[in-house]
Image 1 (cartoon, one colour):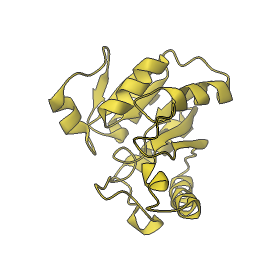
Image 2 (cartoon, helix red, strand yellow):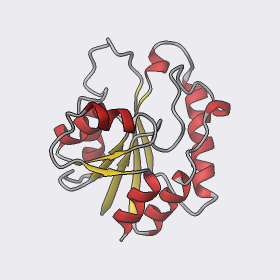
Image 3 (tube, one colour):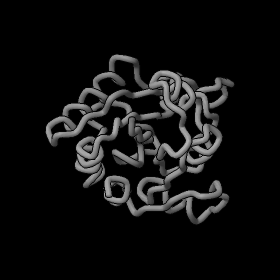
Image 4 (tube, helix red, strand yellow):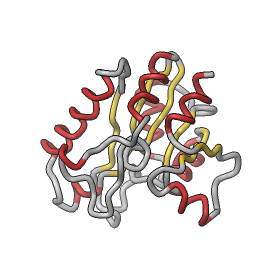
Amino acid sequence: MKLVVLDRDGVINFDSEQYVKSPEEWTPIPGSLEAIARLTQAGFRVVIATNQSGLGQGLFDMATLNATHDKMHKAVNQLGGRIDAVFFCPHAQDAGCACRKPLPGMLLEIAERYNVALAGVPAIGDSLRDLQAASAAGARPVLVLTGKGKQTLKSGGLPAGTEIHPDLAAAAIALAA
C-alpha cells in the first residue's frame, strides 16, 4: 500500500494565528485539493495528521471540527480525490499527551491502524514539529513552503533528509512521478 500523511493547516488550507475555528474559515490553498486528487489517482491512501488544540482550548467543538472536515472531504471528492482518514490531536499544548506533534504518537497510530511500517512514507508538513514527528516515527519528512513553511526553512534545524517543495501541488507531482 502506498500511503502519504499530510498536515492540514498550512499544507491543505490557509492557516490562521487565531486557529481555523469553523467551516467558513477553512479555505484551501490553491492547487492543494488537486494535489490530493493527483495522489489518490496515483494510488496513494491520503491520511491527515493534524494538531487541533483549539478543540482542547474550547475555541470550537467536535461538531464544528467534523463540519470543517466534511467541507474538506467534499471539496476533495469533487475533484476526484479521497482523504482516507483524519487523525487529530485535540489536546492543548500543555496537556502532556503523546499524540501532539512533534511527538510521533499520531503517526504511530496511523501505522498501527493501516498495519504499515512508516519507513519511506512521506509525511508532508509546513512546520518543524510536523517534520520532527515524521522523523521520530521513521517516516520521510517533507516540507512545503506554504503556511509556516518558509519560516520553518529559514529557522533551520530540519531533520536529516527532509525534502522541500514549494507547495503540496509540487510535492504531489514529485510523489506521483
